[in-house]
Structure formats: structure tokens, C-alpha cells
Image (cartoon, rainbow over all chains, first blue to last red; front, side, top):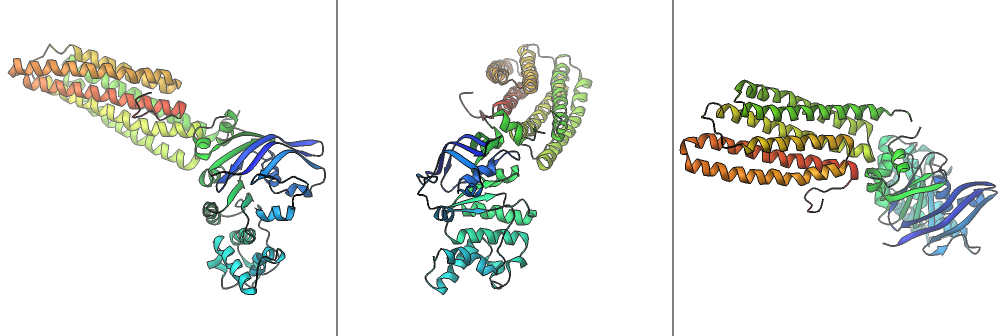
Length: 252
Length: 220
């Protein structure tokens, strides 16, 4: 399978402060790539580079090249709304809209006018909820508030909302860090299932989670990409001493 | 750098393995002495002490599982626990062979002495040295030393073949010595197996150090 995302010599600055240093990385299509590293290492910043979420931050500046499907997403002509539809995002804290379960998932479909009829809309919502492994739990209460769902269900609702607009890449920023082990396991199973159709990049502080669900792991430290390798190699025999020290908890 | 919780556990695990290794070395040495010095009491002691070795094996198994479950080791830590968990039963089997040699010694000590097996103690010495070097190489994480031990296994195999031929000839030429010769043949076979087991330990050393699986490979 080819590379979905190719990053070359990327530097990122918040004003005068450089947050990412000369990062080059290829993310293969329909794989799960995990970003790990200590807090402040730049992994979340890098994740947000991939769908231009940092555009909203004043003084943020970028150098280098980020290509998705061969197209530079930082070109002036880029349709950022279309980009974010193609590259969806799920955050650490679930953030459903204060709307019904149905309307949450339907939201993106409606504003993008992706549906041809009411029936088509309902079908799209159902498919997204099914893909997010939530349908069975909510099918009888679609008109009720999304806030009535448990934390784990809310997070899967947010995944369904991201899936509804038919993205190709899903960025996840610690999607299970606030969930209990059972809800976490559901999210992890879902991620593994979703990679059949989507390219997934996940930021996680949970090493075992990265080990369980990702095909490749990238280790960041102080804004630099230290190592990227198949996850199995990363956790049994990493190339870099810094990686070894980090994944075995030798950093204070 | 502060000590991690897992470091203390891994230190204890290493100590336990080396204690098992040392006890196994001693069992092999004493079993051969019980044979060459025709000392059945010593042989019985080796057999009795094998129970201690079995107990050590179980302890290391339990501790390895505990570390895997509770500390979730990665990278070198993971390879260390896996290597220890896999070396442990190998040492226990070597000790079993030592006990078997001691059992043979008790039988042989009641038979007329066979003097034509001078190469057997030499073979045991090589096996003992290989075992000791393998454990040293584990401690110092020396993969070259481990490979040199693996190559030495050929010497053990050659010695076995020579001893086998000699003892068969002895049985044909001197039928009253058949029982004794047969038991000596078993002893030689035990030593030959020990050589193979030491090789297994060295392969696990290489895995620990280089994360390379060299078992069943021609090129090591």
C-alpha cells in the first residue's frame, strides 16, 4: 500500500518558539500510526499540522511540505474545509454538540449537503453509527440528547460524527485517555476495525495502547522525530537509545 | 537516573537465574565425580538436590509471569524477561540430565570398573565449561562469546560419536561388561544432550543482546 501522507522537512513555530524541527515522515495508507513521546514533545502539534488545525492559532508558522495523496495541503489554493472533511479529527475529551444523537452525526452531512433525501440522511447516520460500533446501543434513542450517553459512548459518537462526512484519514488525539478500561477496549477494537477503510493517526500517552493497536509507532522528543518503525520492532528492539529509554520508563 | 521499580525486580530475577545456573553447574560436576570416584553417596546427594533445582525453576517462572503482567516490560527489559523465562527450563533439564548421570553412576558403581572410557570425563569437562561460559555470556551480555560456545557444541558431538564407537566395540569384545558399557553410553548421551541445551541458552543470549532469532539457522 502507498503512502497517504508524506511530510518533508517540516518546521513549525509558535511565534519565535520552534515547536517542531525538520520532521520528515511517511504515513502509509490504511494503517494505524501511533505518535508517542513525553508531554510537550510536539506530537499533538504535529497531528494538528496534518489537517491545518493550527491555522486558528495566531503567530503559528510552518515551513516544509505536507502532502496528502500527493497534494501539498499548505498551498494557498487549498480548500481547508474540504481538507478537514477528508482528514477528520477526534479529540481527547469527547465534545458532542448540545443536540440529539441523530443531529450530532447528521451535522456534517447537512452542512456539506451530502445527502439527497431525508431517507438518505437517515441511512448515512445509521452507517456512521454502525461503523463507530455505537448503533446497537443508540438505535432506539436517536432523538434524545447526546449528553445522556456515557463517556465512552460520547467518544464513539464523536467518531461516528467524524465518519459521517466520509473522511479518508482520521486523526485521534488521545481518544481513550478519559475512558475506563472497557470503553477503552471498545475504542481500540474500533480503531483496528476502522483501519480497513481509513488511515489512522493516533496520539497516545499509553504505551501499551500504542503497542496493541498501531502498525507503526513514531517517537517524538523535544519537537524532533527520534524514530519511526514498525510497532513490533519499536517495542522489542528499538533502534534509538532514547526510544528505548522512553518506552521502558527510564525518563524521569 | 533514578531506579525504576522494574529494575529491582529484574535484578532479583537475574540473581535467581544465576543461582539456578550455578546450582546446575555444580550438579553436573558432582554427578561426574560420583561416577569417576565411584561415590554412590555423592550420586544420591545429586539426585536429592535436584528437587531444590525444580523449586528454583518454579520460582523463576512465577516471577517472570508476575513481571510480564504487572510491569509490562518493553524492549531490552522484555527480551530479558523472555530470555530468563526460556533459559530457566533449559537449566532445569540440564540438571535432570546430571541427576540421570548420578543414577547411572549408582548402577555402574556396583559393576566391575570399566577403565576404557577416559574420554568421558573430558567430554563432561567441556560440557561444564560450555555451561559456565554460557552463563558468563548471559551476565556480561556478550553475544560473540555466546556464539563461540555454540560452535563448541560440535566438539561434544564428535566426542560422543567416538565414545559411542568405543563402547559398542567394548560390548562386542567383552560381553560381561555390556551392562556397564550400556550405562556409560547413556552417560555419554546425557552429556551430548547437555551440549545441545547449552547451545539453546546461548541462542537465547543472542536474542537478549541483539533481538535476533538464530535458533535453527545455519548462519549464526
